Image (cartoon, rainbow over all chains, first blue to last red; front, side, top):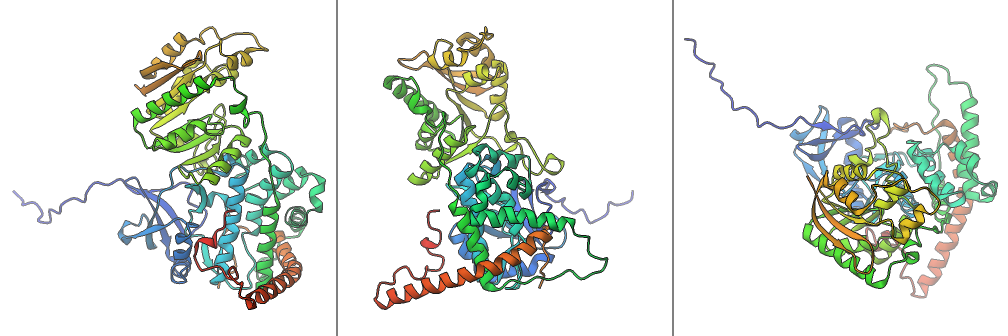
Length: 476
Length: 64
């Protein structure tokens, strides 16, 4: 019998193959990947000098200390997912990834100002920000932070800023449209993944914005310059690309002008919804009872991360934060989210992140292969969802059958605190005031039956001095 | 040193940027001269608390 080969090596531990993030393909200097569920970033040899300068100039250390760039730990090079790696880092994780079309005006504005600040600090050490993508910024503990640590490169002091156009399209155009036209223009970013085309922004902005020096230069003139350049014949094959120069003072002047233009944009949130909490019909007893019941249920679940759906200006998000949760507070109304964000920022309550979302038409997956930006349901799972004074808007306002609401909630989280608002409640009567009542199954029995198919009902308690009922549900 | 970017900076955008930087540099330069001058005058009076941001300090990111 032939003997078995001697080299009976112990097999390597079974590990999932590294998964390169599908959104991480645009910049060849590196990419993000996951290995065994942990997120890493690999720096490629082509970007070795830029990475070395980012570290050796102390830029990284200062930006991370000021919480302007996400901090990271350097990992062993063997963890690299693909060849040609010079360094592998493990960035600190952000609670929930959000996108600019889910941000309110001030969130986008703060992200814009952060981008300009980063470019300015990079210039101080002979580097520059090589892109100005809004997707490189995330909202973390109440403030914007750059998550793409590979965004800095060494550059000549006289080189123009290649990200100028991207900055105007990703930040300035949507901010100007919200401030001067309508808050809903922010949702256009969902359609235009590379930012709002400047010719479109110029056409949509009111004519008076031509008299604003910054908007006139960076949007109206900019759109004209792009149009003229597009009509030029292409350069001859083999022709040297022209190197343009800007003085150091010119660099700073341009940044200063962009900063003043962004800072000059204002938007005052005002809507039916942002005043909703003060125009509702609940008695003080009912409000106190509901708050106390929600608190008890939150504590009973004892989770870490909660999503408050239809959060409005965040009364119950605050209760969840007090109960020790980190909360993402989704609401469809830009004014409510703006008011909520300003309050959270003002009180320094970084446990809550307000974001814009219409649950009846949530953020889809977009971009190349529909994999660049995750859909609302692809953003991870919280421990719990709160759906207070929401189901009647979905079931009656949007005609979604109660079974459909229950199934969506069960896809989102293992537990839910849901409020049932019956037809006799004044808020539901208002929804039905001008229409035929086609909702024969909309009753507390219908609710129990529909939600009972997806969840076990752990607790059911009426809200005092009100026809409403609160349910604590656990996914089957 | 590379001056070309991985994103398309747009030839019209680059040209406009060069022109704008030239035009904006003039008022920017004079504003800076004036504000530096004011700082120096105040500094001579011993009131120069806010002249230079401490590197990496808390005031590096004012509440925007």
